[in-house]
Length: 197
Image (cartoon, rainbow, N blue to C red; front, side, top):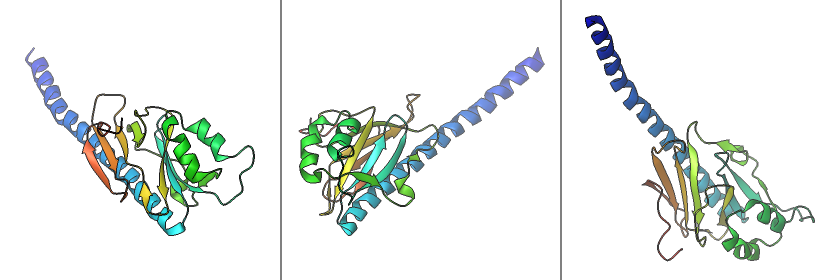
């Protein structure tokens, strides 16, 4: 009986050590994933200004992955017009469809030629929780969201939340400022700014 109590005490001590370290590991994974997405945002903002072409960050909420795409110089065909691609991929972003079409026209987008042009999976256990950009009325929680970066040094005010989707664990939101492209990191899944709903 005493041996059993000693074993239970040792198991309790081991659990007290393991559980906090697992939680700090997940927190480190979340911070690492937020830095990766932040880097892609910074790269998109700079590349649009330097190249003179519209760039966009594609955020796949369902597959927890992202990539950077560039406005193609190829002439659009009937099957690859931006309008068709926009309708198929921008589920939940109907509010901005006309605005983006006015700027982008019938251009198509293609992945950029470096590593950020391939789909990059978030760190294991981390998912995209939500995506919002001005002037959307509500956040997307599924599908692919696009954040556009324009050559004149402008983007949209945006919120991209990452976290542990399978549990009610940590969440961080990347807030992208429209005029500077500067990103701030906030705890939790931030609310849409007042006046943007």
